[in-house]
Structure formats: C-alpha cells, structure tokens
Amino acid sequence: MIGKLNHVAIVVPDLDKAVATYRDALGAKVSDATDLPEHGVRVVFVELPNTKVELLLPIGENSPVAKFLEKNADGGMHHICYEVDDILAARDKLVASGARVLGNGEPKIGAHGKPVLFLHPKDFCGTLVEIEQV
Amino acid sequence: MIGKLNHVAIVVPDLDKAVATYRDALGAKVSDATDLPEHGVRVVFVELPNTKVELLLPIGENSPVAKFLEKNADGGMHHICYEVDDILAARDKLVASGARVLGNGEPKIGAHGKPVLFLHPKDFCGTLVEIEQV
Image (cartoon, rainbow over all chains, first blue to last red):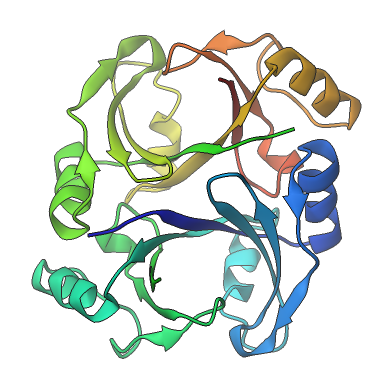
C-alpha cells in the first residue's frame, strides 16, 4: 500500500541555524523558507536525490509542532510521511487493521497541497506517520 | 556532500508487532529478521521504492539502542542515515564546521558492511545522524 518515503520532518528551534547545518556542514541543497501559516510552520525543504527532509519551525499561535519543541528543546524528528495512491482506501484499510487516524478521520490538504492524514504514533512503533495521496 | 537518504531507523519494543504493522497494515515489503549481534540489534528492513526504513530491536547486553527504548517505551525514530561518497572527507568537513563526531572519530563498519560514523544530535537539530560511505 505505502509507496515512497515522501519526507522526514524535523522540528527545529532555530531555522537559520538548521539551514546552515544542512546547507553548509552537510552540503545539501536547501530551499528558501516558506511560511505556511495555515499549518503553523515555516518550512525549508532539504532536497536529497531520493526524498526530502523538511525542517519545520513553529510559527503563530497554536502551531501543531510547538509542543514538540517544548519537550525537545534541541528539536528532533517529528514525523515520517509515506505516499499512497488512494488516501481513502488507505485510511479504510488502516482503520480495519485497528489503527487510529488522528482528527476526524477525513483527509485535510497538507503542506504540499495534497490530501493527508496523520496516524496515531502508538499504533506505528511510537512514530507519528503521515500518509499523503500523490 | 550528503547524497541519498539511505534509511530511517525506528527502534521498536516488539519486532513481530512492528513487522505486522508495516507488512499487514501499511502493506509494505519487509525482509526477514536478521540478527546483528555485533551491533546489538535484530533488524527488519522495510523496502520502500526510494529508500528503506529499518526496524531495530535491541538484543544482547549493552545494545546501543536499549537506552532509547527505556526512554521511549513505544519505540520511535532513532536516527537518520545519509549517504556520502568519501566518509573521511565528509568527517573532516564536518569537524571543520564545528560538528562533533561520536566515538573516536574513526569510521566503523556498519550494519550494511560499509564504513559509517555517527554525528552528535545536538549539532544536527536534535537528530542522531549516521553517514555511510556507499
């Protein structure tokens, strides 16, 4: 069912420093920063040859990643995103397997403009999983 | 400098359950389990079209991932591995940038039989980073 690993999201306390780490120390190609106020994040994409790392800084009030940063002051890996062809079919299969979908169970439009759902970490090896229809 | 994302490693408390999650619920292709006693882990590879997820169960005494599981009882993302062409050149560039290499700074042979180094999470957005020469 799942296809490619679309991205790994890393929440960071200082986006300029994170960009310097990935661009200058690790020598990766990084995008400009983009504000996504409807998602409560400023994001920089680290473009690797086979996938992406997304560096996320909480912005605004009620950012969904602000609490993560309170618990992890240095930042850290926040979620992993897998691609699916059909998000409703994927959701139904996951729910039938006993997995919990976060929110109201209906896909929302994610940071890439495509339908996404988040799955409960307790059902996925302690890891917050996003599925994105591509 | 860094190339592909080689893998994301997820430490799990129950490897059979993790395999069922990835194979049955998420519908991914998973390998048989392999014991790597010299690395203190039993590993299952989740083979995605563009990269891998490694499910790691601590085995033996002094497993390097046992403490992670004590702190994260449900498991969680443990490290991210990026490929490099020349691990000594990569190390020297990273050290020159102020980053800390774990251990004695000399590459060891990793779980894939290739030279690896681990980098200090505090210097990489709170994320343990492995670099692997491919």
